[in-house]
Length: 291
Image (cartoon, rainbow, N blue to C red; front, side, top):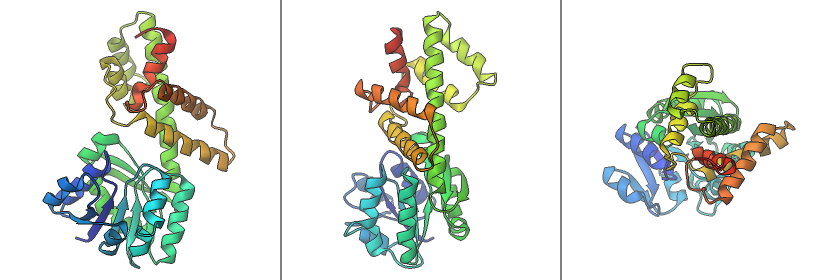
């Protein structure tokens, strides 16, 4: 199998990288990452710079927090662009601005490198189980070449369109997720204050048109008071900002997303930034004086 460079071994990246190793891929990673000590015994090779990782890999994957980190890893003095070889494929699986994805793709093209933006949905559990949904922007040939690798990390991988299309799709995904969590938080808070049994209500709603994965999973989280992060609230707020910036770029008013983003700001101000994004329910409870 081809050598794969993997940069960004955080809450999502580490299990994704482990799945690739378990599938037989030869992984190159950074020795400065705290997860390196867990992956090198599994067969990963550690290098000291992103440039070295890229120079020794045929496929380079990044899984980073935001656009500034991607820019630093790609364009820095010892970054990926300085070491990547013509004919390689660069895949950014972070959630970043579509405009940044297009800039990276253009820079890679000048080096003779195909670039894919391939953000994911599914959270930590999806990363661990290899059940992520992967939304891809780029060309068909590069997508086809990487499909076996995507199939290791995800249950579905769809080529949406040209560079940036994957990131725009992820922004839309986060808008829908954010607004649906808000809807579940509001309905559960109203029901609780009115004296309705939340377990019974959730069961009834899951059998009707309001059924959703968010109602299923996050509805249960709210009932169980389990706000340990599967996906941190502060990261979802970052994603909402990406969506709002895209709305501004394309002159589309995103009223619902803007409102949910402001609710997230209030939740962050309350100190819940490290909690799961379902902690939006805590804000509704606080405002409504009910638990």
